[in-house]
Image (tube, rainbow, N blue to C red; front, side):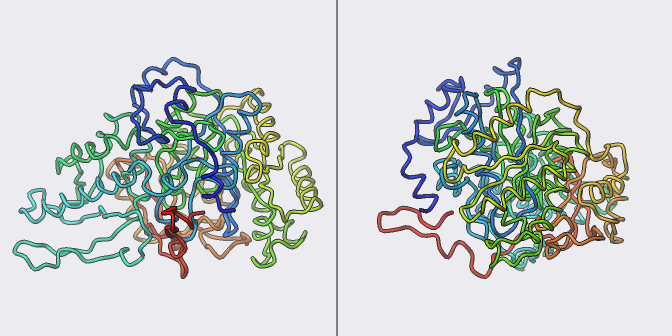
Length: 557
């Protein structure tokens, strides 16, 4: 049965009732139909003095085409916590249309661990990503209009790109201004996918509307003839952009199939952006429940690193537990097994694939000093013998210091995650070490990049292009050298080579380009062949998505 069919069989609660269960009154939400709502930012002020709940960060090994089910585990865990009598809430990212119509499909969980209404959430939802797209492209229009109208700011180089929320490789580099009109200045431009837009990052890192407007004004759109930065504030664009984002900054409230409240807000990818949902939604979740289950995109080398080194550093949030999701199939894939034989028993490949899992465990425990639970997302093809073999390997290689839990939330919902929920609760009772970071902000940009590459990825060294070195020097000269870094890297490998599935060593991280994001207040580091505008595969998911005879959406998974 398709996920969408399972979701349609469940009778959802009116979202007003879901809100009341977490002490949010009807006048504190804006309804988007019966099943979706925006939470007023005024709720933040009401909850300022309330004791904060535990944060559980769900991450994973490096992802594979087999889908590891990180969101399914997150949802199952939140439902499982409720089943053992704990007040829990989810804080997740919004899906992007790019992967929905591309290769990944939907991002609302699966089976009996889903957030709903899944079709709405996977498609236009409450319009947040469209609002970000509009704000981004309004700024682009104002830049080119300013140049057309005489260029009073003496803009010489434009670094700001347009964006759209679809995968379209043709738009990575384009020529604009080709109409031949008087005063029209042709120039090279390009598109990023909306989730890579700096405005997406700003929305997720802003603490309120005032902070949002401040950050929007700080966006550097390019440089003048003297090499000085020009900002959105110089163009008087931040006010209109903030207006377009007025509603988008409010978190979205929905529910799981078991009616656990879920706040879904913000959607940056972790391979090309910082990969975390909004600060506002995570803080709300911590204030509204005893356990807030959140996730960071892709593997722990990307999403979790950025959650910790950017988001936690910026907010003081600290996860009490890190759940690392893995599957037997994915571990065998990382061990070199061919995709078509992945369901067959293969202990050699499983043993080799453990290297990937152990690296992520090591990073969370020994770099950041956080307790870890390994969640094995069980598939029907998994044998008891291989599961036991994996459990024994984790036990042996961690000397019994890491819990492991077999999770069946896809098939059983919250019931299938009760063991994981209990283990998480027990760890939250233990005394916690202070959170350490991978690097210190006072270190140079190169040192920060090198520490992430060597400590988190396991690289032997980092190579910088001359262009990247010049960009680093420029960022330091402008006074932004103390910002955190956000590395854009393939999700498929710990290295920057997507084909290095087995993480063959030694490897080098290749830094091509370094971009200042003054509004988001971090520095983006482009490595390998990563693109900020993805392309579609040979047979995109869009080919299978349609309306049936009853006008139901089919093909989203």
